[in-house]
Length: 394
Ligand SMILES: Nc1ncnc2c1ncn2[C@@H]1O[C@H](COP(=O)(O)OP(=O)(O)OP(=O)(O)O)[C@@H](O)[C@H]1O
Ligand SMILES: [Mg+2]
Image (cartoon, rainbow, N blue to C red; front, side, top):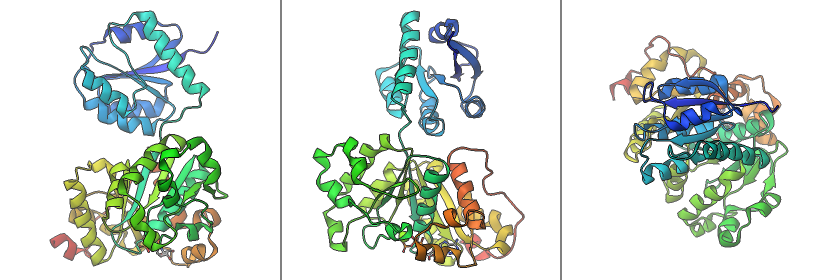
């Protein structure tokens, strides 16, 4: 007999279980591995059990949708189904948009519910379906803070170290240099993709895009600076939409100013790595950038503050910095003093490949773990120090 598929039930309606729950519970092909009665603890359960399926009961409204949106990225191997008593059509549409694979209505006959669930699972296995890519923008709050360094190292590590399907998109419209960091000759530029958008066949696209030996796929910005104006911002969102199903991660190396194109990319992003460093200008920009993100309606979880070139001697000051910027710091990346990063640019080999044990590489690997919802610890709080009074006052 085939092994039963594991599933969990997630609801914030207390003990109340609807018809869909009871139909699935009775199925011999499914095994109920756990249940959770609130959204945050459901994430812990998903992490622990990594079930084949999860059923979300949205009878109490749409709060579960924002969790669904996050979980379909964090748990790509779990299929998410939704149900709700008296589900309004808008709720069903929203659930499907956020990544539900089917909406199961309580009125459906039991055998039909089982059939829908099992065939969705079979289809996903047959097609090797993955959740659509998680789009991660690397946005430096000013030039030179390390956006390209981070985008290239994360991409290479995700592709080579974790075996993920990775696209790196250089959206620095003028003087994009990610190709240089990877010693890659771009084959098709963003402009060419945009110009051929209407007839673009995704299945053929893979063969035309540049591949790095780590396995990552690369799309460069326009060849020369004047061409940047020929790229309509809306096309950037279209390209991202088109390529999302093809990859696990899309990393975007963004410009450090808010052009229309940058804004489109940031809108599309699931996560914005907002990169700063400890100098007055960068922290000033960081505060203004975070305020703008708030005005743009980006929720806090979408924005991850990264402090690059973090000196070892400053390790005590994190709490004060966080107070000053009114935001948690997601991770600190150390200042790499032995010239390894400069050398890596010269050789076109990201340091995470050539020197995986150096401090910068280890932190980048940890950052990726954090982004994947793994067990790595975010920046730890330590005792206050005295070097950031100026920012704290502002
Ligand atoms: N943590 C670090 N320690 C030491 N050097 C670093 C660190 N991070 C980045 N660098 C170096 O700083 C330089 C600038 O980095 P990078 O090009 O990644 O910045 P950027 O934000 O992409 O800049 P731009 O605005 O030009 O696009 C590079 O030579 C890189 O090797
Ligand atoms: Mg750059």
